[in-house]
Amino acid sequence: MDTTIERPGGTTFRGRPVTLLGSGVRVGEQAPDFTAVGPDMQAVGLSWAPDTVRVLCSVPSVDTPVCDRQTRFLGTEIAALPGAELLTLSVDLPFAQRRWCGASGMEGIVASDHRDLSFGLAYGVAVKELRLLSRALFVVDAGGTVRHAQYVDASDGPADHEAVLKAVRDCL
Image (cartoon, rainbow, N blue to C red):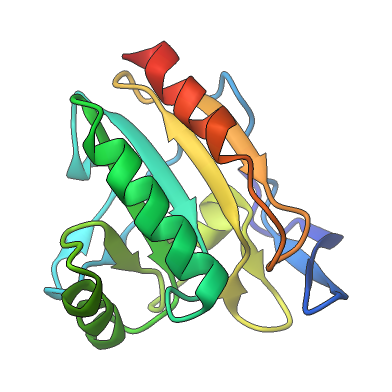
């Protein structure tokens, strides 16, 4: 993984092309570890749910309607699949994420990448111009291999949730 790589036009934000930092991940590769911060201010990394299928959901902010809906939908769907866990990552501060968890009734499914963009750079979703994360979805199997990687073309565009759920079911 080379975090010095810039991918101009890797996605759009409010209709404008933006640059993604990092080379990104591909299906079949070992998932890179990262360090984010949970709403409880504790470190969260790829090992937060060992021996499970992990869905990593990257969003600009859980406080936006599209990202909120996506996180709630996937949170509900993934919770119904024993052996799978969801983690939504953004650069929202942990305090804002804790507030979102309380309002949504969904606990333990968000983490903040605000400190050093560890996740954003490792997975190629850090937006250079805005210091936000772009929308993307990754499925990592229990052995740590990337089984699905979906980089959404627009920050407010649709993600293929059914493809993510199928990839999760295929790993279980």
